[in-house]
Length: 263
Image (cartoon, rainbow, N blue to C red):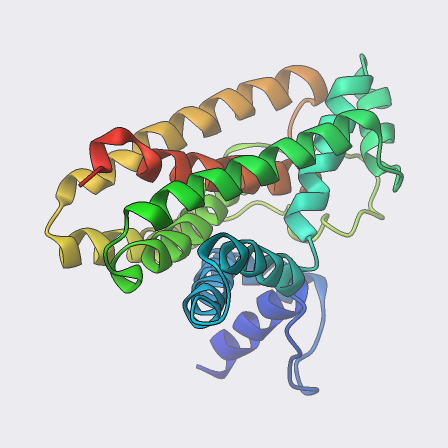
């Protein structure tokens, strides 16, 4: 049990800015094994975003409360995944060889492709969540669960890369290298179960099993990105995981924004 607690706090330390107890150690082995709790970080980030929205709606207009909830989620992760998405936009937008793409992604400077991509994906998040929020008769029955579902499922989608694909960088100095060591099938199963749990709970709560259809566009996202990354760089990087999480999160919001959900 203590081992699992240590792995949880290791994941919390790596994937968020939440302070952890001083007794939590740090090693490549712990970091690699802690990836099964990556979807659980989605529970926390989505929960914080949802509670921020719920609390601030009593003080601010709905759109401003929604925007501040997005700020809260970004602050909680230190824009970790947004940074990966921007780097992927710059790398694949400006590079034409594997070496050049990887070099651009490693550059800390933000380019035109990254700035444009980041602005567009944040706008997509805001307007999709705005649609969900306006349709909701009860905020606790709609947007808060959707936030938790989206953050958990998107991280589970990114997690599958560590099992199905190889890490693209040959050098050992990347901060994501310990995370990229192959997961075993049981570890992947645990991670996916933790990612699916909020969706299953939400579907049962609403008695709407068809909500599970959101898994189809997520599978298509993973299949497309996997093929794209494999073609250009022969695998994935930590930035690719961040980009996958961001795209998958938006896909969940777009799914729940469909006109089918209008009341």
